Structures are given as structure tokens and as C-alpha cells.
Amino acid sequence: MALPTEFAVLDRTGRQLAIAGDQGPYGDMDLSPDGKLIAVTKQDTGAPGADIWVIDWQRAGVPSRLTMDSADDINPVWSPDGKYVAFTSYRKGNADIYVIENGSGVGKEVPLLETAGDELVKDWSKDGKYIVYLTGQDNFRDIYALPMTNGKPAADKKPFPVVQGQFQKDEPQFSFDGKLLASKSRDGTIRVWNCMTWETVAVIPEPTYSGWFIRALRFHPAQPLLASAGSEPSTPEGERCRLIHLWKLDLDVLLGKCVGAAIGERAVHHTTGKIVLVGDHSVGKSSL
Image 1 (spheres, rainbow, N blue to C red):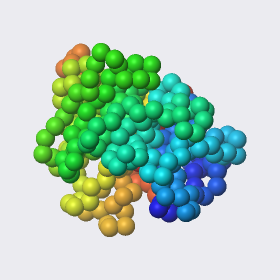
Image 2: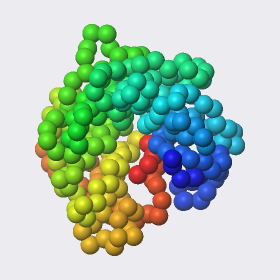
Image 3: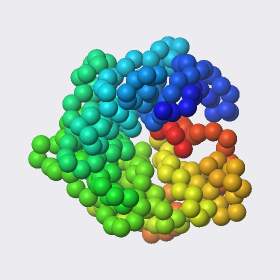
Image 4: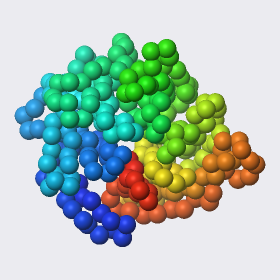
């Protein structure tokens, strides 16, 4: 069970605006596209498994339950229109992907992808066209994309592999415009793909402390910025999970519209907590 935590809302200067609900055993979380709701994994005391809840932080953090199952429901991911929440469920003994319409009531979830293997949802593209997920039975899970239409799998299209191979792949994330996908690897790199061709357009070396793999990776919701929680080879042990690498991307170069340096100089920032990338008119995913 997760340790008791709480959510706080900050302005751009770091000033705390509000506490979003009471402390609780929260796990994975995702902010709604309008920044008003928090979809979160929560396991109540004595409950056999975790469920998906939604917290309205503007109404004193009032929570509402989306799922209720004896098995774990985890990894909530909002659809870009804020109508649906996709999540990973173990209710049939392995990891499958389900979706539920926010506000539809407990128990209204439906399966998106069910197979004999494991599928762990990671992100929903901002144009609504794809859900990206990890699948496989070993440590080298592959990244697949599921074509979507109106919150449902596209009837005439099947899931397809984005990247496969015997190396660690994790935390695939779409850019704010849905044109790029990025993922981290244990080999010390971040790979970036063009979502129109699914070709690799950049491999970014990320210096990191050997043996300390931090999965967190996020695009800015409105600007060509990519942030990664990581470390430096010389980072003191107590600071290894508090280092944020930040890159500025040239989208025209990455998408083949012009020639030049696709990745700007890396900036390193320290933080003592988790990060939410905030744009001028929207709020991004959390949990860096």
C-alpha cells in the first residue's frame, strides 16, 4: 500500500494555492486536461485492491470513486477531451486496459484491450488518435499504440508496435500536439519518434547514475519542452531522485521540415518534490 500523501496546487512562483483533499494512500495520478480534476490510484484501509478515484481540488478536494473491484486498478490516464479515464486493471489475473466515462458512476468501465499477456496504459495522444501502452511478459516490455476513435478502439485498425527489442523501455509519452512520442531506456538514452511515420528522429543521451533508473518523463503541455527525472553520475545518493533534466526541442527539425539542431542544450534543475509542467492555458501530466 502507498504511504499517506496529499496533493497541493501551486502557482508559477511556487506559492501554495490549495490542498487538494485529505492525506491518503495515493499512487499513480494524472491531471485532467483543464487542470480541475485529479485522477488517482487509491487503496483504502482494508480494501483488497486499489481503485481509481477522481478528486475535484476546486471543491475542497471532494473525491469520487470511479472503479470498485477486488483486484488492482492503477495508472489512470485522461482522454484529451477530459471525458474518459483509461486505466490498467488486474481483475482477470493479468494487466488489461479499461476505460470509463468520468461521472458515469461506479462499475461502468469497459475493456479497451484484453489479451493473455500484460498491457499497461501509459498515455493518450492529445489528438485522441492513439493510446500508447507497454506489453510483454518480461523486463523488456515493448511499446505499442492502440488506434482510437471517440474514446473507443478504431474498428478498422489494430494495435501496432512502435518499438520492440531486448532493452528496457518505459514511460512513453506524447508531445502536446500529438506529433512526437518519447520514451526512456536503461541504456541512458531518451528516444523520440515521429508519430506520422513512427520513425526514430532523435536519441538523446541522458547522463545518469549507474544502477539508478528513474522512469519519469513528461512533455510540456503547450511548448516544445521535454523534462526527465534523472541523476548525474556524481549526484549524491540523497539527491538522485530530485534532479530534473530539461531539453528544448526544435519541432520543425524533428518532423523533417528543416535542417538544424533538433535538441537544444540540456539544462539541469534540482527540486525537492514532484513536478507538473504548466503551460499558458493548460496543465500537463504530473509525477516527475
